[in-house]
Amino acid sequence: MRTTFITINGEIYRGNRFLFTANPPAALRPGLPKNSPLNAGLAALVTENLDCELEQQGADGAWSPNWNWQGHLPAEWQIARREWQGELTLRMLRSFRAFGRLERG
Image 1 (spheres, rainbow, N blue to C red):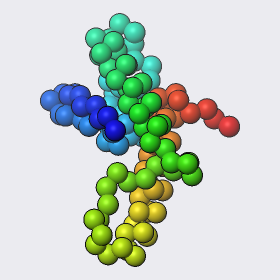
Image 2: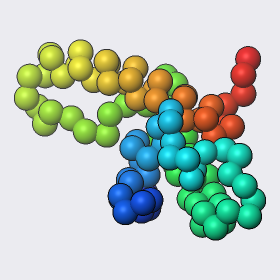
Image 3: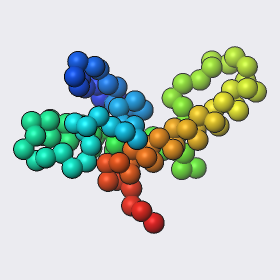
Image 4: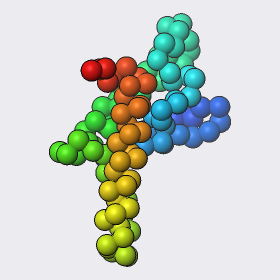
């Protein structure tokens, strides 16, 4: 899995799972003026990262955690994993909608 890192206002954002939230930084929101100096540099990264996230979608339509509890509390992990799938899937769908990549039905 490829991860993209960028810096905005001195803060480092990791592209996979953390940068693309339901409320992206203003510099990355859709509708950024075409003459913005951030547009050219970040638009390609946003597209690339969203494409990467789409590839991580499971066959069931959900996004799963990219971590685990390494065998600790296996029964509890199955419950937590399912809850995290719901949270991550909701975040991803909101991100896709925020960046115009999700059609309204």
